[in-house]
Amino acid sequence: MDSHFLAGKKIIIAGAGMSGLSFTLALRRLWPANLTPPDITIYERESNVVPAGREGYTLSLAGHDETGGLYAARDLGILDDIMKHAVQGLGNKFKFTMWNSSWSELLTRKFEPAPGLPTSGIRIARKNLRKVLTDAVGRERIISNTTCVDAERLSNGKMLVKLSGSHLPENESTAECDLLIIADGASSKFRASLRPNDTLQYTGIMQKGGLAIFPNGIPKPVDEKWGIILSSGKGVACFLSPYDETSVSWGLSYRAPTIEEPLKISSIEEAQSFLEPFQSILNATDPKFVSRLAARDKQAFSHDLSLGPAIFIGDSNHAVTPFSGYGASLAMKDGWDLATQLCSSQSLEEAVKAYDAISIPRATKVLKESRQRIDMSHATGFNYFLDRSLLSFGGFVLGIKDALGST
Image (cartoon, rainbow, N blue to C red; front, side, top):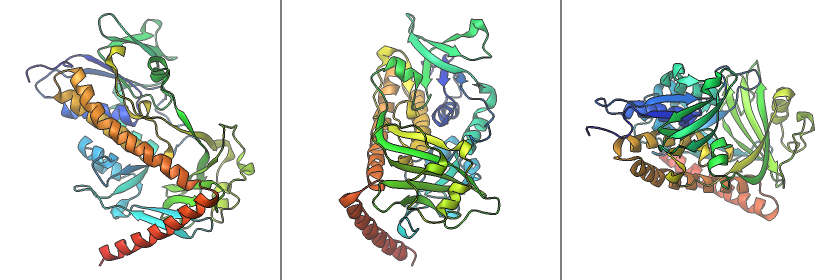
């Protein structure tokens, strides 16, 4: 290939999250050495400093098949650095657990690692995953405290991106590019502008969560396990995972017909059926930093380049709820797969068509499974007893398989 349609061209990436950073790193690794690389600028609305109380949460990176985030990390060359920050999954001990309200195990699920990977999955603090990606890309490539608020296609075929930021000079409130990569998250400003009818859908689940601090050590069983506690048919569940050696990330979820106002932590009645150590986890959480989240998602879509050379990746295209456990994996795989298709195709149209063929089925499958987990975790009445029986039977069968596999 003597030339390339992106050689020496200008690329703007809106958002320095998992998908935008993965794409940047992937394009650098895959770009042909004999060609002039594109000029890439990343705009990020947040600063590089994580303020107190916003340390974030842990997330999963799957490694049991090639769709997982650990596969992408390996291809991106950052797997070893990511594994240094894993809080679960070291030594191939990556098991998802479901408990009842009295902490009896209903189900423990373990996957086998995909070939070439050290574990079938990990949990990692979001801030640490983003730091590894940022360090690999180079902080100098990222313009922080700057938001991409809108874009339009110019008559010359390029995109004009409108910028907002307190540090921007007046004559730099817009920027032109040959390709716009939209990675600005589930509540994408670009999607609202370019695809106004493509909106997030409320799943009927509200979630409140925080970070519980235990200076003297995390209580059992959350010190070594992560998973979900289920209420006794009350439609309430709680996700828990170690965040680091002295803290636990938690998220209490329950059915709500509408998106409601937040409650103070002291008035969370949904969790009263959960026994210790859950009440201790609530008490160890600073009420000022309890977050509120409406669980929302949306279907993936194929691209329409008549809107301009703009490609949506990660949550900006196919938002999933925390119940998927796969949002970060999708984001990182999107970044890798899009860069792969751009580098190997003869035109933008060819690359985007090939990318959609990979990304859309993957995201659609994850969203469907996420909705199933929501229904199971928040079941009431007869559905609760049916799901409970299936969980018990599933746990029995999986226990036999694990026992046979260890002999």
